[in-house]
Amino acid sequence: MEEDFYKGRLVEKFGLEVIIPNSDDRQIVHDIIYNELCLGEIKETSKNQFKRIITNLVENGAEGVILGCTEIPLLIKQKDVEVPLFDTTKIHAEFAVDHALKV
Image 1: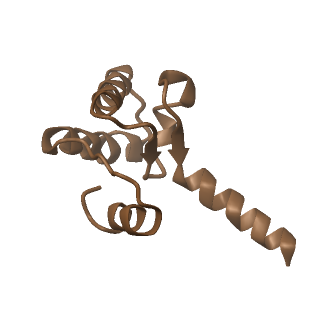
Image 2 (image 1 turned 180 degrees about the vertical axis):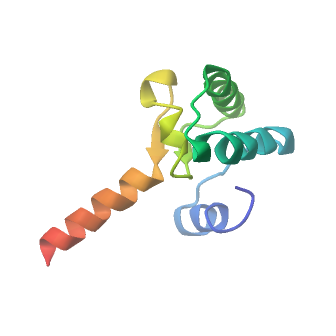
């Protein structure tokens, strides 16, 4: 999250202010992804952690949240939060279909 792959491009190309979770919350996200979601485990406690992290981001000014890992949408849905969620897997898939259909 803190690398320029997303953050730098969003700042430079679109002028967005990018807010990322603090280091403890980033570790929680990492652990949930690799120790649970990648193994097919969906836990309500983890969903609540994600909701808490998103709430913290919103309180710090976030107006939307990028779900930048393919597994995250297994856990958190738009109905779970009040800000827009951007599912990068869905966005890429829809772009690929649109591009394929234009050829």
